[in-house]
Length: 491
Image (cartoon, rainbow, N blue to C red):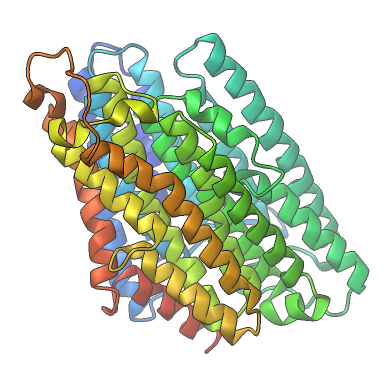
């Protein structure tokens, strides 16, 4: 079973994807049942493996393409952190998308690629070799493009072209980095990385830079972020998926793998490449916040906020200290919970009340209280207000910066928090304190129906709050990130 479980985990989203493609458009109940069954099955397997990995169980599947070239799926603590997030949010996003698209067209195509996207994300998390990682990394690009262009209008198609231009260029650079490195070392396994110290330092620096450039496109680090705000032409469930579960998280996760499981923290420090990456991440954090402050469209503001927030993960990894690494890893979960909440709410505001601009939020807290509460909790968490999850991230990154002797990072975190407050607090003020115009709807309660549309952001907002309140528990996101660091990187 330990060999079969990684395959089963991948199959829980791959099989629903393949089945959904062959369902007729009118088969709504079958389509929904297949996708929800896959999501619940994935979550069940994750719960089983959380206990197993905590106890030291090994879950691994190998398949040889040709002699010397293997596909390796393995479930370590880091992989399970990412998979747990994607499994939990896939279930909620599926429920949300079913309610959001009710009565829409081309939904078999949409949900097929939606599940295929989650399968690719799961494969990236479970990848045990660079080649396996690259295969699923490319599958993620190919499965998310149809989601970006789902509406089929000119704006969506233009966003899709830009998305492909950025991501395929990044993939070419990533492939060059993999081929260059493995031509010198042979196949690289994350659990048993090659000894790279025998290679020329300058060559290793070039290869490291290529990895960061290739993967950094999906992580939306500056100046490789241009595709992300444009991709907001996609429907709200797609935006939520891109920002919280799939693409940007796959990029940040990949950079963590390269630093810790390909090069190793000691070699990264020896080559002197960690600090320049920390500078780039810090600039991206501040740049994304400044650009977010300039946006009047809600989804565009959230998109630039993602550009900023995802680089917290990269900053924590690049500082390469125990507390900084914990802060970066836990933010992979915390940012996912908070950001998906905000995109869910943005979709509800647009779909139920026709609101897409910040000015339109005036007075909506009284008309759509549950949606507004969820949005406000997530926004306060992004700023870093305790006890919401975002505070835990910034606290650990701050301690980690002092531990690594990089006191300048404190200024970056403080500046980012002030900028976060500058572009999120006005939204909260408009929701709760600014009077708004009457909405031409049957009644105020009708705005927060159906329940399947409203429940997901309420659940994720509550999860973000609980992740902060219960951070001391062993199975909290912080507890699991601490387990990864203590067991794997600083035993």
